[in-house]
Length: 471
Picture 1 (cartoon, helix red, strand yellow):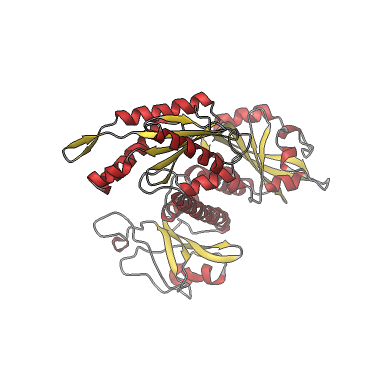
Picture 2 (cartoon, helix red, strand yellow):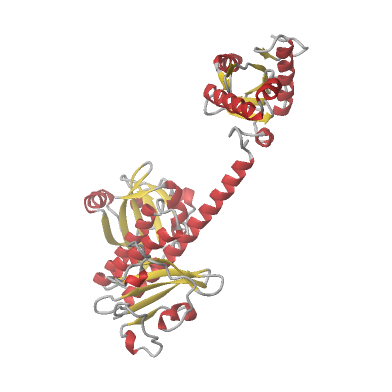
């Protein structure tokens, strides 16, 4: 059964040309792609929640219960359904239904396409089943591959299995207009392997020449079932296995050729059904490849942004995070602001050096993280000064958290050379929005309470209250 992660299925299926529905065992629609919305004349909100069997677009009834039973039994069902389009005209549609396992349950993935004429059932059904299975395969497997090459290997294997090819390669045009392979199957040619391993060497920066380059230069698929007799044959490298048949299909994006699928040595040669299969597979491959690259770019940007909001030494959030957080904070969300300062920290640096001082700050940060909830934030404001944001607390929760930090740090023993020493922390507390209308304002008030904790002897927690009344 295909695993269908929510993070991928919508982005993968929204732009498909076929109508696609995600339907539960009771026949209720949970998702409809853009093509389905357009064909039915509804918007997605109107379609979701309806029963697929009761749509007005069904010119003939669909008995969903036995269909679901068959689907559970065999995993894939094909049927022809009488449909009525938004224009009021009836047409014959083909439904290819696959059982999928989504994060929230088991569903039927319906791929529906209009039949302009009744197809040759054996060849068309086989081809569409293969393509449907390949699309499902990408939904299942593209979570795991970590590189473009791994995705290329996955899709090349599918292309070889779909066509019965002995070997092939898939790749893209580089910035110099030459060919870089993303994946290359092993044709049994020793020169194709990295020395000392079974790993296949990739073709890189190769000039397009001979008939194998025609799909890229012309933008058209090509079948060559007698390679040695082709007028543009340029022969084979020494030691390369015999080439008995060749299929080349261009990969396109926004109308531009960006690469090629090349397959070889199908027994009996290639035909137009192979071309149609690989052309459909090529479209899905390009979408998958570009989507993965977009996800990687977004992840890189997210990680870079996240790094800019972190203190590199302690791993805590930094003052920039505090400033961004307060801009997005709702007035309805109560937040306790704890201002924390390590007592007599300068003397630690002066006595033991900055390396020991850094070690102390890291341990203080770790203790604070142990004492807060996952929904809270520990921030290094600068130097030995920290702030903690406790989400939706009571006064008692804020006070207890501060006390837990103070007591745990006081019990911690630090080591420097042959010496042992301890540190304490002073903490001031203010509440947003009770004490101030911004987090920055609350931090200032918490700092005032912190100052009074210092004046009162350090190693204590003080809650700020108005009119200079301090609890």
